[in-house]
Image (cartoon, rainbow, N blue to C red; front, side):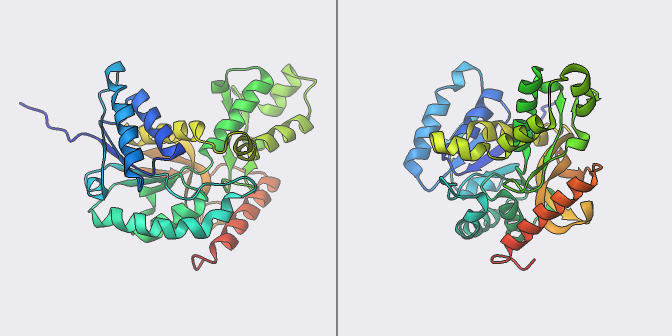
Length: 318
């Protein structure tokens, strides 16, 4: 008896630096059966499709094409990377007005196609725009996911691995809050292997200091500014993070990732999207993981939510 399974389909809206890097990551990792690229710059998108398709003989059987919003109807996941980019000297929150209006048109076009899958949002300010997509689309909150602090957490783990001269896969910790200037490191729950970071430092890096770790976090928080100053945009690492998130969903991995999702009383906060650890599976957000924060971290998280709420006021009644 024949086994009929509809091919998995991911649609990328926006083929700039992040969108095209994401498409490249997806093809390299063979994550989806079909990959559709949509952008206002149709010629550039067609060029990306040609270039990506020429890599198919090297291992990935993914079917790739330049599409339209009609292709969203049968998509499992829509990834939005379109919008104005953060420029030198700009914060992510500076982009709210420009990108919220762009997103209204995008989401309306997607939903008009009959789309009934999961949105992943990468455009900044990602927390505010994830909230916008949830409001504009009318989809359940578990099916609208922002990239949140997935990249910040990766930067955190990388720099800690470098500091302790360890495989980054043995570093376990989270960056929470706004994907931006008010994010916070959860030092109280950071572990090297199974050891709390403080105990590990006492045992194996006695010359290390709290000031070292504070400076390390500043490097995490400000990484985008330094990269933008040097090359104009950050795109490789976030593209790989988006590919990881996509794979988690399509393969139903039930992974814990620091994504932007709607708080409904968790951490004492309501009615905003912000970066927190959550279990992600084929249904989207399966549940938020409420980790124990110490008093300082609770204050920092409350400050981060307050800044986001204030920034959202010109666009939404929150």
